[in-house]
Length: 396
Ligand SMILES: [Zn+2]
Ligand SMILES: [Zn+2]
Image 1 (cartoon, rainbow, N blue to C red):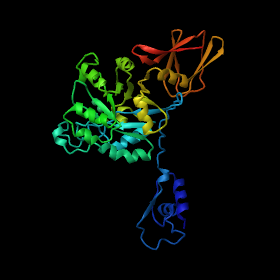
Image 2: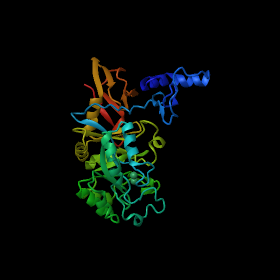
Image 3: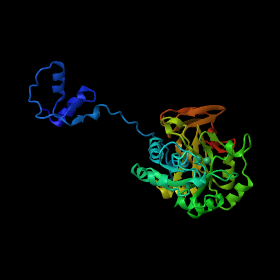
Image 4: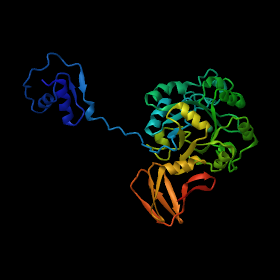
């Protein structure tokens, strides 16, 4: 009789899942099925009532998480984040734990689940936007449900929410809240909600400022008096320049003028697969230049406005961090006087313009070299430091 180890080995050799009554070896079952010969060894004394399945022969090879490599920038770690995500606890389609797994699969370091305060869980489809129907809601539920999964997977997990009602200011995310229920307790007054969040030390982010449903069809993006009021009260710390599949270039100038942090967030509602596919480079990412890979460092970095927004092949950032990221990512060498060699050592998309020619520096290919004569300045066509203002780099 085969022992258990030999049995598993034998089953694997057969190259398929093997389901056998306990006590029967793979060879025996083959013999009895094909030649009807009497087994050479004694049959089991009693009817088998358990089975062993060798899963090793049918298990799919897991897809490793997406690797996004970006060198440190002036001593800061470049963390990959998404600070705008929905789950079934507002109008999203998936559970919080799945958002955590998807984020890890997509190579992210930090996320915040930001369900709408004003939208009760998807499972109550009727009147889900009627705040009277969810008076006893637990607005911390998504955070509480996914926290242990995030810890297990070593994903930095920020408690957050989205204040949604109260146009004209539009939607605001509150990040790093202490207790969402205290914010939900003043749900009929968006000004109070913002203030309670701020009193908890939260970071407040103006979401999708150009969303047509919010500003009206064809209307121009405006930093209105209400936004000015919010900003002056210290209740606006950042703005999304990217949201879902939209970008708002003017936000770059607003953030430069008012010292605000830029964000590229997914605002994902459907499944990851439906929204972007597997490990898609289209998924927006907010890069955070943090002292270390910790929640406290992420919070410090957001308030210090050390963020860079990356989506749809474009990278938006502010001085001095965007040039610093370029300097860290691209090795530039002068081979002989006037001959330049550029190498992209990061996963970031980089298109440079040299003498009117756009040259792609492919990501993740370290040994490709581009040479050009007489170069003193390059323009990084897809890295933007202001509206209509690509990054320019002097070559010494
Ligand atoms: Zn929103
Ligand atoms: Zn949202």
